Image (tube, rainbow, N blue to C red):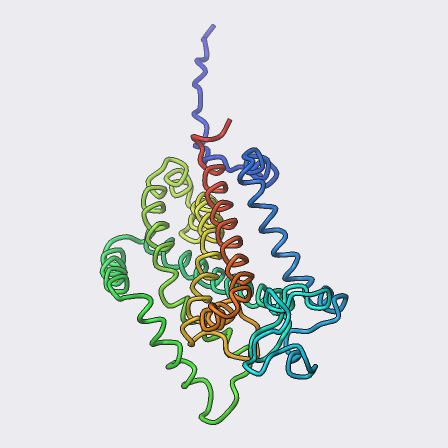
Length: 326
């Protein structure tokens, strides 16, 4: 009787595993510092979303000039008469010097301004970085060399100087002279300015990762089975760089919040009457000796938000690191 020899068929290579969202959240919250940072970020998000409701319950709005409309709140020089910047039971965080607006509602709506611009800019830069980085990393060859040269040229420019120069140029192109600039236009200009250079670091990182992944066994197996470039990119490569995308987006938001505040502080960001942290800090620096309280609140809010988001980004990066998994 003939003996049939059984040959073991090797299994198809399996792509690297990716943590589930619940597992990722557990890993992040395992660190007390990260858990506190997550709570602070969540608090800021809730304050931004609920700013109109909080302002309605509080009975104030960010645009009304209470100090000018109500006698006795501001001195002849425009400073709050009450101590500590005008803090009282009616104005919990005091009054803005000069215009006499409520500081608390200015802060709440300033969160909305910063987060809206930061999230939009992060979404645009992430999209551009993914398109450029994955495509160049997969194609390689002359495309890769041209992209490397272009990236080096763009990174050689002084970013802050270009941001200061591009913002008024874009505004002048989009708005007719003598026409009031709408709020959405101010946000669009800042998103375009941030997106002009913000996508490059992510694209370079993804290019390096994709160049390594395209030689892995699971990609070669998919190619040997007749999978096209579209399938390989979207079904094999992109799912394995999601960790980089998440970390980039988490770290990009506080970067754009701080950059938007810097531009507004320098006078080329969000204009009046849109509430903005950077402009509040700029105004606070002008009256710091007479009223240091006014700079305190937006400065502390900006510091806490950026610090918490950076700590959260570090925790997400550590949680997605396979060497840190338990």
